[in-house]
Image (cartoon, rainbow, N blue to C red; front, side, top):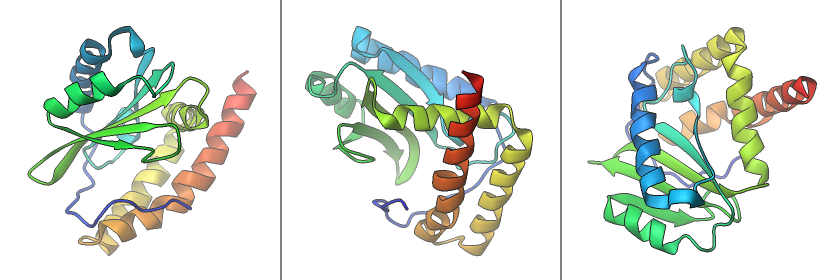
Length: 181
């Protein structure tokens, strides 16, 4: 299961909002302006990238680069724009940037080099959910129930959805992707 590096914080699970796509586009443009051609792909991932998905209103972005070792100039620039920076946050050989205002998380930017196993994990889950509305409902229902059970305990909320997200959904997404090829 996942290691929980976050702390308890206030959170909400909101109805899907089309503004999440617009917010992603703004973030994508910022990333492209900062990283230039080092950003090989910039993808909207996570629950806010799935039409109809209930979600915490945090925009998750996947950035694919050649390598993560030569991005110091870009990460400094992002820090200057108000982003928090962490190395190896989700896994080894990765970078993480997030934006918070008054303790509220607004954006997560996950940076991985080409070929990193986490890239397929993000994309397979997203793409699987985009074509399986019954799974969108199931995952939304899990999140709503957990938010009711743990309204002031973000860590328990995350732990509660961990098995579905990181075992069941990962397996379904990977199996589905293999059948697509």
